[in-house]
Image 1 (cartoon, one colour):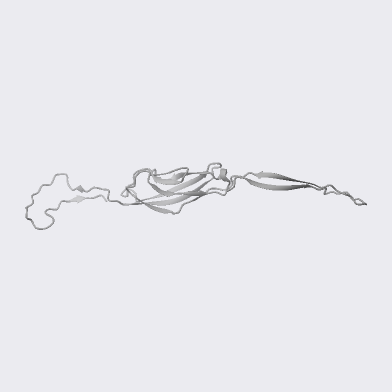
Image 2: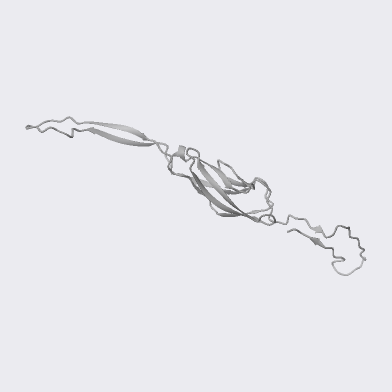
Length: 178
């Protein structure tokens, strides 16, 4: 990625239709060097890459928690290689920082509702609109985030004798959504 490519071209003026002389003739040949700047054309698409294609995140991860960072390579010069990142398909649960490629949690996760997501991220050339895509699977890890709920709606009352043997004086039914 260089900003300027300089090519030196040597131009030589030569008489290629030289007349035929019966005697020796001297020809004047002029030579001149010119510097030219080669202007890059945005003819390469950005190549999106990441260190992983599958990641895990805990369902209790806070909004803004970083998941993965994407990078981009582009064979064009600096101006034509500049890219922004976006999410093509992300369920509205994830976001990406357009300039850094940082994928993050943007909404609460819930393992019980959805345990994994297949997200498609893209990098797009700012100069020419060329895009490349990369998919990543986000596995949501279950946490003990659900409180137990007692079965039935009426309060339970019972008495316990002071010297009753055993660790459990009574059993009460409850459920956990986990």
